[in-house]
Length: 483
Image 1 (cartoon, helix red, strand yellow):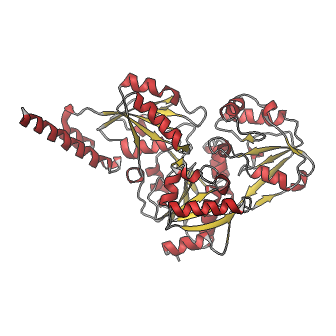
Image 2 (cartoon, helix red, strand yellow):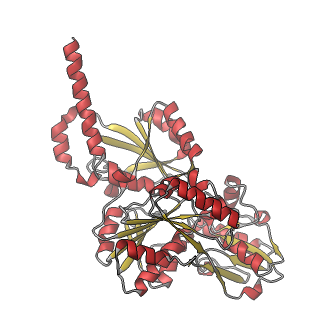
Image 3 (spheres, helix red, strand yellow):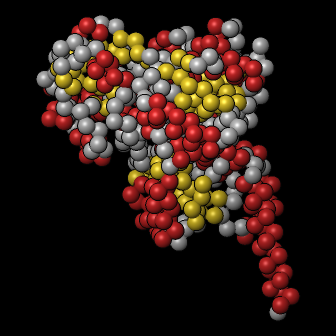
């Protein structure tokens, strides 16, 4: 009896070791026919739910679970982005062999019901910019229903490029990753280097059509029916004559980008980790939110594993906060190079602001899950003498009312919510209904190209300026020996 139990234990242990080895490789390395033949029909697939927000969740599936006969991904759940649930991850992306009907996407509120209904084994947390507390609240929900709770790391999910990769990530949403990324790309292009940016996913439309997207012209923004959120990230590259890729399948995206680039620049979203193995990683941190670099996932991970920590916005933060942030960064990552930078504003027609009642429109994600109380628009309104920043709440239309209910601390600001046509229409109606004299737009795009406004608009642009004698691109070039 004891001998039989020992044999059974060894058999289970061997299978567990095999699964551990499986997890350490990318899913596209699997040979499905070999795995099925080796394990036979007796292998029961581990049932998984991936908890996400239409980005990291799809990437985790593609790199770890797709084509992997050990796992059966029953569903995705979606949160953080309005209206992304109720879709299906198509079989063409999920893999026809194992998922002929695709994978359904539910609202995260249904997590417990789904776990219990399908007897789920593992819940894989797969999105970004949540406090450590909130990450574990979701974990507690999973554990209380009997499931395991998984966090997938870089070793399992990062793809290796054949070209050097510079990754730009952050400790929180709204630190200034995009302006940092644009600064790097623009400078390298001026130095005659072939660099192409790849942006963190924002697939809010038809997932199959968005598998691989290349943006080089304004026509491309129209071709892919970009939302405001997408335009905010892609349009600034297009205006600078740079190329940027995005989409759903980041292995296919990398294969295309490598054909025209000698260097790949990863422009991260929220405070997520890089999808690619970085040869050098820059993490942007924010002195307006000191302490968050230790309290949010996976921002703390980024701070700990980056080669360069860029303290942005030092021109609008107190020196006390800058020094405290620098101290925290040194404690978390004593080997990182620390660089300070400013975000100087460029405001055309700033004379329209002085003495006027203004409605300030800011970048949406920075105000919502980024938790910022203000952005470039507020800074510009104060700098150029606005009489008053009006409260948009009496004028809110449609889905924007829901946004303020979800994020009540937004205050006297209007987030440029535009995840779809309905929200864009609600944004336009809200702005036009307001009694402001002027609209001050702190988004990275010319918002008048997306909505028709019945008031004068002042666009606020912001770039990156390194200070203290240490230039970011020079450090990158030296470390990667690009010259």
